[in-house]
Picture 1 (cartoon, rainbow, N blue to C red):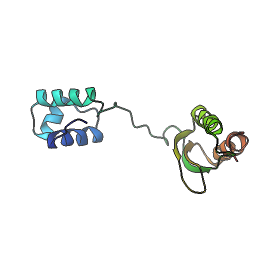
Picture 2 (picture 1 turned 90 degrees about the horizontal axis):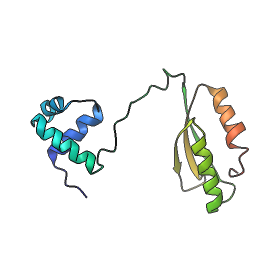
Picture 3 (picture 1 turned 90 degrees about the vertical axis):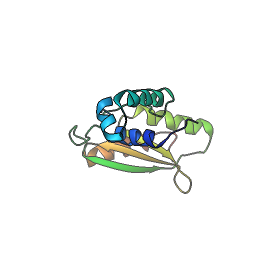
Picture 4 (picture 1 turned 45 degrees about the horizontal axis):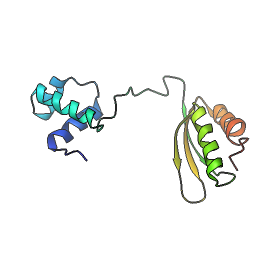
Length: 134
């Protein structure tokens, strides 16, 4: 585990707010020189504390106006069936996130869709007919 001090935490917080900050902008925010910020950022990247930089896309601007959470129960609880379900989830672009659960449902899916018709199609035409889903 990497040692992280208060300056690293400030740097990480600033980068979470805006990953495009220059080293000089970071320096102004955290109270270090630009070269110190550069070295710290590079160390945090090398140690995989900073795993990457990403664009935060607007679903609405892309025509995806509906976010749906869908609970799934698997037909059987075998490793092979779970593998088939995970493969299905990986192929469906509308599914943004999938979480394994305990309790009545086995998975919780987060899907981004254009509208209720898209949700209906996903549930009725893709998920429910799949052999892995109960």
